[in-house]
Image (cartoon, one colour):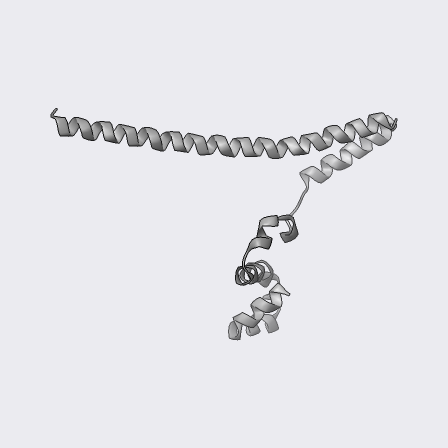
Length: 130
């Protein structure tokens, strides 16, 4: 091999190492974020357990409370717009478009709104955002 080929091979290896380490870093970062989210939930459960214990709550009622909370945690349903704080920071036109795409499928089931949306989409966006 001559010198340019060796330099090219070294450059490709360096690029591959940097790309791979960036990929691994992003996965690690996401896993840490998930762990932190789970940690908040776990702290709340521990706090509830402590509250039940410190206040002498009967084991029967404590069990019913735990089961109810487990049921709530497994059956969360759709996320509401008000639960996503970042959506408040969107510009008004983006919020209007987002609300239109969220609410229009339900409105489009009615023939009046379907026809009206086809003729004047801008007004329908305002209707959905109000």
